[in-house]
Length: 479
Image: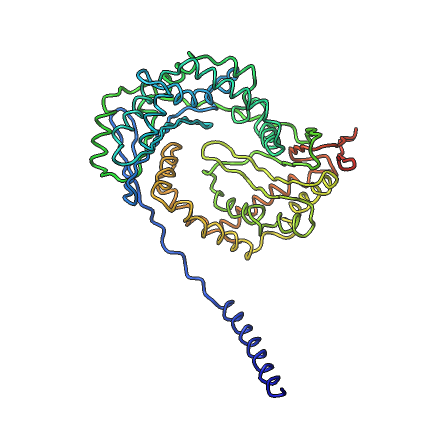
């Protein structure tokens, strides 16, 4: 018995020592540098009529996918017909062509396990397809006919309008959706094209003729970027596309809308929602674009300050203080217009004021306790280690390359991104950029006197009070 106890004791000591040695060894592991990033570049072709085509071969599966991106989106629609482009992008596909209805196209595509879809966003509309390689000719014929000869049948226009009315009636069901929508209005201005939303009157004002007029005003070859990825030979595909679109006459050049930004006055903006027992908070300011020379420093700062579970905001406000269900945010960047600096929190109603105070404290602390080199390195590692998964297929690289073409960015912007992130440090040029970001945030926070907010803060809540002096208080939690 005594001998067994001695053996057991020796075994336990050996295990502890081994574990300590393994810990020390783990800490000494050297992380190798990331391999060079050279994504497969698509072939770029420009037709005489101005259509730009990108061809990305990918022979892993017998599929061919394509998408046409056309200049002109939601930000270009008239203010009295907001919702026009959303209706257009739906009826473009459901309305069918001059030879087939949308329902007939559904049946035609279904038996081929294929799809053709239309869509829209703030600056463009899209028409895409996906098909087996063996069915490409049949499906591409539908795509080409929809691109050039859509019908926009009246019954589908009516259906799309009714669906839009239904969406408007339900848009205040979700607290987060309210907070995003209304905070965007504060940052850009209520009537700004990036902030406007469809209303019953603007949707009702849209007619079939509006959709036809929009289509023939925007869908011209010189306004289209077409990208195709899949199992094909680039030379043969190029010949087919030249035959299909080469004789299409060029249209008038697209003129980008001139958009001004008129942010709301800094302060607190409260939205009462009685059926919740929490507050959804958004602090907003105008952001910047990806052309900003400080773009890479902004990306790293965002990750370190509010972009992940290990960020400062999450560690301090959620984990340490237990004030927020969710917290995060950063300085937004867009390709061709300012993004939104947005800091977000979700908290209990009774801790709303305390949570806002905690957010201001975190901003103030940036001056006293700047982002450290370990925080910067962790943020860089997180960005770079996930970076490759954003572009791990030829089709993803194709979509990104099409975006650079659309916004006029250099073709090697993707490769420069990784190098730019790697260069961010506390010192040097990137360090100066990070200091500028911190000074901006701290300067905004420093102008606050108790609850006279320097930011534009929207709070979707169940019960709150704004006092005559502009301060903010919240009552007991809602039942």
